[in-house]
Amino acid sequence: ALYPAERFTLEQAVFLDSSEETEDLLQELQHKNSFVTYDSVSRTFSLHSILRGFLKERFERLAISQQRAYNRRCGDWHLSRDEISSAVAAYYAAGDYEKSLQVMEEGMSNHMVAENAHLFVRFFKTCPEEILDRHVGAGFKYALAAFIANDAPTFAWCLDWLTKKCASLPYDDPESRVWRGELHTLHGLEAFNDIEAMGGHFRQAYAMLGGHTRLYGPKSSWSLGSPSVLFMFYRDSGGLWGNLEQLRRTLPDYHQLTQHHGASCAQIMEAEILFMRGDFAGAEILCHKAAAEAEKHEQLSMIFCILFFPTPRPLSRAIGPPGKGWLANTPPMPPN
Image 1 (cartoon, rainbow, N blue to C red):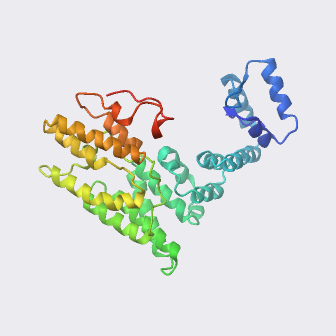
Image 2: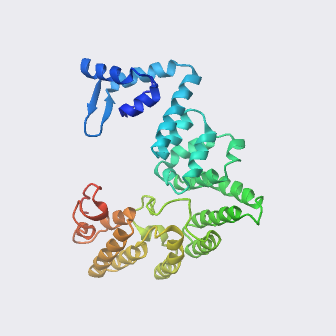
Image 3: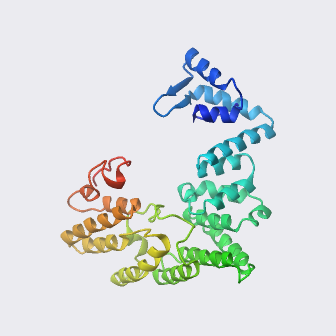
């Protein structure tokens, strides 16, 4: 196959090429030139950028039907390995929107759109509406991607489309109730950063779902890149403590809906308030408590908020030494 993959295993190459000579050809290329290298640890072949560029050019000369066939087989490979994001991207490259949306819906709790929101917004915008119309679940992913990408017009369009779609579903169907519950989850995000309004939608979402939301997982980013919880939720001059109390009242509903997504955010916000008021010791104590809570629920975005906190002493000790606990596979974080 001329598919210009940057890195691949022998099994993947055989799967894509469907040829008995693939293994011999790779070994010959590896021994005769330096354009193909083999990593015995990861068991992957890598292509030099010159060869990859050449293959990409040759690949683009193929008939569109052949290109799509290779991309579709690549999608099948990634799907067989449960690599959902890569599978969706490959089916998209193959022009197979139906399969892309189907895979996306089968992995509803996968937070792929949060990892590359702008890419998925472009993907959905090119998807024919008659195909999207058959995939309500994917429509929710579209809305989530638009929200994360800060594409307000697209997010508003998605909410309007989903509201009409949910209104047309039969009321006695349990699945319809689930989609209406997820719609409340999206309306909760729409209400950001009106904490009371958010809380009302999250309570209704949990009541209708009877469990956790499938739109995003607990390990997805909670802060959307912001290093400050106070910055995210402080709304009214003179009402800072009131905002904090609102957040505390709302969090239990949100946490049961999202499996403790954003755990420790209220403690971080309070620590920021204390710091701004000159209570540095109180702020540091709260940061250590917040770090313990964030580590317990594997909330990496909360850890980043803590590490950015301007305390007089480094807080990197709060997350434990590198190589221990749930951060064992995460590179050591620098002190602030």
